Length: 295
Image 1 (tube, helix red, strand yellow):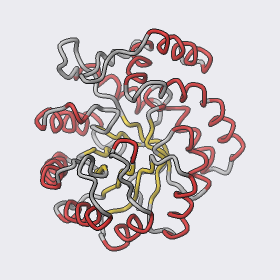
Image 2: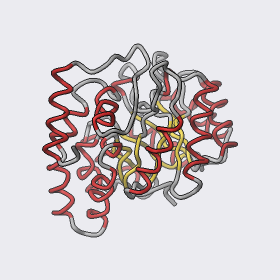
Image 3: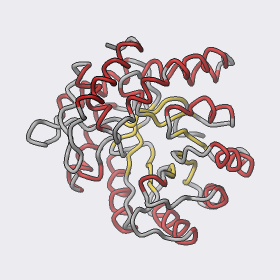
């Protein structure tokens, strides 16, 4: 059984001006997501700036999210690392905190082989009992890619590796993966502009940046598709393209935090080395939000 089906929000981590985590704002964002029918929350991923959190902060953010959600929808925690032992530590601790699943990113910087990837993911999975979604995002891992054959092998041979978040942007590779996988791999889009294309290949949904600011709409793109309203889903996907483009006109999560601040959601500042959005790009984002009807 899939951890979730539909739209999972890769939720931001709001910060105070001094850089500390703003848990009051985080609670408001979690409630906003659940009220607007998002299907899961993915905490401490790329969008949550997990790479700038200390281990203590990382686990405290996960704990807070799990307790605030309180089993109303699944919570999936990002606990990956380029160090296998670190990923094991974070994963075991997250499991203790009560997460419903883990999102484990491809190791970055080390640039390991497919054999190394398989061993890395297998060892982490064997250290926990909760289900794991692999996170394939070569743009952030020095080009290291989990090949379709490796994904399928892991999902078939390791009981609690159940799927992959595909942020490769390569639809042909996803098609190959789905052809090899049958029903053995849950595939989630990691790109908001490719939700419908991945659903058409048999995907389970999306792990979304867009749904931070448009949770109901992102949920509906998936729900309409699953209910057979392919044309309605396609229309909603295309209507969101300008906003999606604006949300990625600078590196994620710079624009989405700005967008949340525009909406009065108090996402706060960013942790360095990320910096505030360029003024001209912020104007493009603001206009796109107005045109989409969320400002």
